[in-house]
Length: 477
Image (cartoon, rainbow, N blue to C red; front, side, top):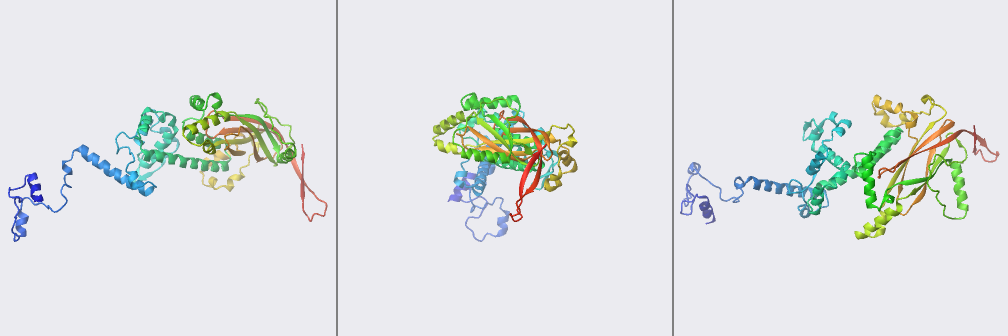
């Protein structure tokens, strides 16, 4: 009866409840007759599955979107902790209406003149790299979906100061019309990039290239802030204006004041520390900030002697930072002590030196023997290696040291950086760079002059020490 009604609906019934051109009661109808029937339907299958031809283009597109979303939900559930029923409710650009994701970021970058990233494409040498996608060669890196996605995430991060303030993105965020797959992936990509930049810093330290090391630190800062320039005045001004608005005025702009700077032999530091431990405890007032070149009246430093660079500094933004962080935490219902525990403020101290007694670069301390010890130089092309070999003394990295402020309440402190004194005696000029890893416009470059004396070692003993040798170091001009 159901089959007959279906045939009536299609206009294929002969009015007797049987299909036109078929035998209704004879079980003896042969196969040849069945083959000659002009119309033959398999009515035992699922009815209505073959109606897609009758769907409109819009309905077909919507059905395809739903299939895509179900497939994505399964993939998300397999590759993450999200359950499939939760993943089905995720908003996906191109599947759900008015949802913003990768395509929107690309369009926003294009409007801002940041896409395509022609400069990055040229400088990185990507134009010379052969890519493959699904077994086929891709001539242009931007035609490779994975490479393009990474570049969009990179340029999106470097232009975040523009994208985050976009009214379309802010409105979509308030309506929860954000492609969480893309933006969560972007956050994970940023974290992986920071790991790679940290690794690049470690490798660069082995090259002893000050310029390269400094550039990578600035890259880290640009990536953390979300800006395309580290030192352009307009970018620095915009960042500092944001800090003023967020942290309560000019004193909320991150910066440090150096109150004292000196280089001492490690023996003098040990003696001073022991003396301080025996002295009465008390707070030591910090000298008001003044322009400095050197505050040294310290003992002489010998060649190849372990030295300590001492820097006393004052974080003048500490009070404003702490007040605003606590206020924001309380507003969000977060215990202030929890908010303070997550605080991190990273800085770098970079040290270089040059001999002032000669202007001849060949007489400076240029020791390239370290290049034979590192595999990175073995894999370099000769032309690239020559750039490191021929680097002038002033651009040679002498020491680099990171320090991280984890206590937001800490306003002042003393940093000590150990390094080896130059192997040649003479008058030296030391260059000290203090660089922030997450703020713009607060770096400092200081200089300090020291005289290095010749160190001579001799054996001192009383003959009853079982051959044990005590080294007494003398410094002479």
